[in-house]
Length: 236
Image 1 (cartoon, rainbow, N blue to C red):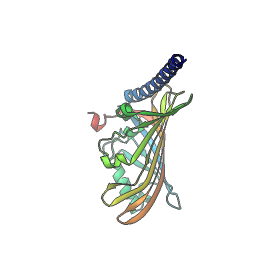
Image 2: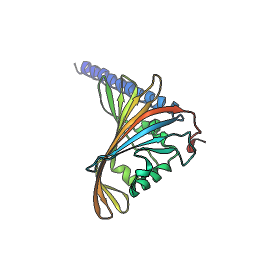
Image 3: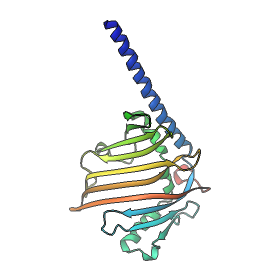
Image 4: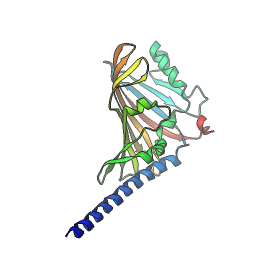
């Protein structure tokens, strides 16, 4: 009887291992497809809404990598002439990013595959815990964050990436983050194409220079267009 139970357990565990292997294989395939599209360039429209303010003012801007460096961002609604002082400063910082379309594809996830861990799965989706592999993120910050990737098993792409804090942390000396969360959603917009970022939601609470703050924002990406443009600076 014990032998029969042991044999049954071995078969069951083997089946679970194969199931996990299949799921990790699906995740690896989704990440590999993104990697093959990683060098493509895209123009897109970005709608930013600050949900932390009572007026919930929104801004629409357009990014086009075919334009000259330093001039790839255009204020659409409201036009730049209607920006206040703080808004002009924020737009100037944004305009320095000539490779903003790099964020549309999650191809950087390949660096996290080795440390991925399956959390849950059903016929429609699988949720994985993934390490934060960004080399520019300090170790102390990484220790305070938890990240997950949700695989859409039916469509074969990563549908969501979520990062949230598990404890307070200091990204910089005068800043303390008590809690934060960021959720990015991806969708395949054209047959055979990669999954692209369509929305990002973030909220954070903490203090900076001894003053408390709370922020909440939503970014929506639309009118995404694959274009012929020079390679990104890091790809040359």
